[in-house]
Every structure is written in C-alpha cells, then in structure tokens.
Length: 348
Image (cartoon, rainbow, N blue to C red; front, side, top):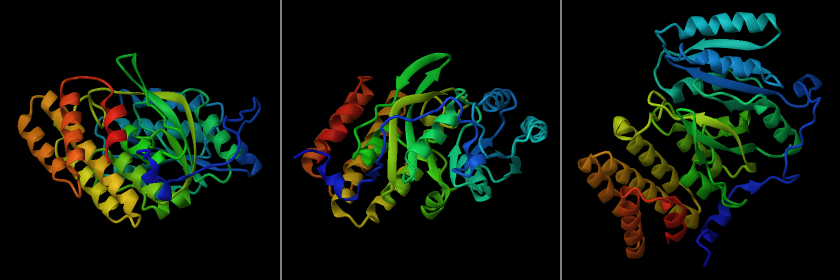
C-alpha cells in the first residue's frame, strides 16, 4: 500500500485553475479595483540594525499590500522609533501602515496581535530580518486572483546563511500537503497567503508556543481541510542566522520545541479521522526522533536520550515503526543526508 493513502480521507483539497501564477505587467494594486485585499503583518523585536533593509524591500514592491501592520514586541534598541519614522513617511505616500506595540513577549503573540487588527480579506506574514524579492506581493496577489476559491495560496522557499544559499524545501505533489508540512514545513511563516476569516476560524497563532509556532499553526490550518494551491517554485530565500527566532541550532531553545510537539500531538489526538490521526502521530514521533538526533549532534546526550525514549513510546507504534525511528535517529545523528526523504514515507 502506498504510504500516503492513509492521508487521503482528510487531506486538503487542491485548488482548481491554472498551475502557474498569471502575472500581468500592469497589474498594479488590484485591490483598488475591488477584487482582493491583502494585508501584511511583520513582528519586530530588537531589529534596529536590520529591519530598515526589510522595510526598504517592502517599499520597493511592484504591488503594495493594502495594509501593512508592524508589531513591535517590546524592543529596547530603537526599533520602535524606526518603525514610526518609516510609517509616517509611507503614510504621506499613500500607504496604509499601522504600528502596534505588544509588550507580551513572543513571536506568536506579536503575530496574533497583528492578525487581530487585519481588515483585509487575505493576510500574509513576514519576518523582520528577511528580504522580499520585488514581486513577492504581486505574485501572491496573482495566486489569489488566479485561484479565487483557494483558502490558502502557498509557495516554496529556500534558506541562506551568510549569503550562501543552503537549498530549498522539497514540495510534494498535490494531495500530500499534510505530510509535506509535517516533514518540510510547507506552511512556514513567509510561505503562504491565507483567507483572514479561515485563519481566525482555525484559532490564529498560539501565544503559548515559543518555537515552531508557524509549524503548529500550519497543522491546525491543514486539519481544517482548506482548498489549497501550492506553487513549487521558490519565491524567496529566508535568512538563517544566530539571532533569528529559530537560531542556528536546537539546544538553545530546548523545552520550547518539545512543548510544540506536545501541543501538535494533542491536536492530532483530537482528529476524528483515525487513519489520519495515526499517521500524524507517527510523523510527530519522527520529528521527536529528529530533534533528539540534533541534540546528540550538539553534545547533549541527556536531552537526546530522554526525547528518543519518549518518541519510541509514542501512541500505538508498531515494532517496525520503532525500528525505523531508531534508524532515522542514527542516520540524522551521524550527519548523513536525506533522512527526511526516506523514513517518513516508510513509517506504518
């Protein structure tokens, strides 16, 4: 049996329509014609040294968003003052910019505060240390217009560190969005636009999540069975750096990742589709094993061993699945590539 057939009863529906984004040269701001409105939310924390570059790239977009909501998350380095200066200048140029302050710490909290202020039909999120290619908003708007029944329009992205590109995410064929998200993070923060009402119905951002908040939200969105369009081509490259939310390793946020996995496990256990529920539990066990392997690589065998044991004692794992998880652990801990492309497909 194909390893993905047990996902099919509750998988998201692929959106109908052309497979490529139809982008006209003179599209401009389509919201002015009353066709679609699109908001952009950017949380900011201690980014005075970088957010100016992010805002300059936003200002250079070929299609402006209908709302820009900047949420300062208690910065003390001058970020808030910079946001206000940029906002005043852009308001004079006709942009709709709002600067909010959210002093309760956490990226998910700041994003949720931004979401609560959105009035547009669709919303996108972006991080304050990444750079938008000039047509990023234009392409997202084109996806929405070309796939008007889609709840989510998503795209691939890549990663770069110190100016070097590290590759891009692998996008699986339509019908496998949940597995794609669980293994590759299909709906990471900057990789999609979503109907605002749909996101709110799914519960929005979970402020209790301190790491992988976008991964947890993405699973809840997919469990709502959205109609989804995915462009497999990379639209942008996000920066991986030491002071990013996720950082360059895992030990520095130990505990946060485990909490997110526990929350996702509870979401999976609440799923009414037994086949999908069991598949999700196996994939969460794989993610625990993967994290345990990274702890071992970062010389924390205590964290690694405890998490590996928890993964292998997961809900309803057959002996064969436990053997595969052990193999995946050793594979990743030994710095060998492609574990994510092998073991999730084999888990039963």
